[in-house]
Image (tube, rainbow, N blue to C red; front, top):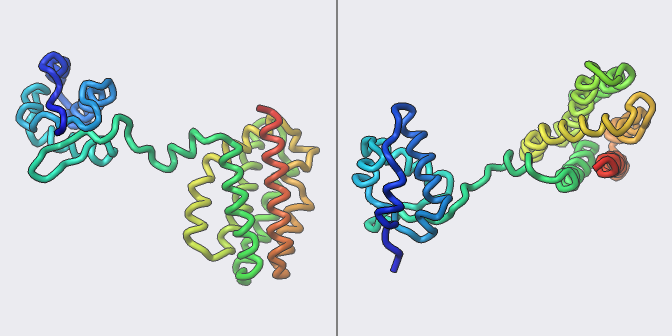
Length: 246
């Protein structure tokens, strides 16, 4: 048997809401009640009429708020029974999980994605891909030559990511490309951290000319094992440099 609604004392803390935006306010107020334990997991929420009265809003506003809470994985409507609390913390979306992930975790997954992407690129690249890869390599090398602490650092990072993105694109797997795109903001932050640890003008730790040129050549000549090994070595060195400074 599910526990009943919270005590009248707990419900009284809701209080009427200020005008607009009512749905957002109602959602947040109900979420707060769930988070602070006023409505534990398994609890049946009061009906829409009761909630509307206590919040000082219409039933349609309450209904939209409950939909938002359901979308966040906090409550679940059970036909003929009511709305029940099923979690006290909202589901985190994928970008949010990536943002709070450790750099080591992100780079381990990046390595899995990019090693396989490089191997597939060496097997599937087209003439159009080779043209794009050559252009991306030239841009990355030019950006590296002019990189220094200051305004040129971010273009350097962006050019490096664009080169890696071109490699992933040459694998011709849309799911792989979509996954890599999700990683890009976190990767960019990690590489910006890296340039505070490594002198990008003199170090080949993560962005060496030879490594990038060899990668594109392995893809051009159709050597998947070589392409995968090159990218694995590069990312392993990048991760080591990032971890060294933390």
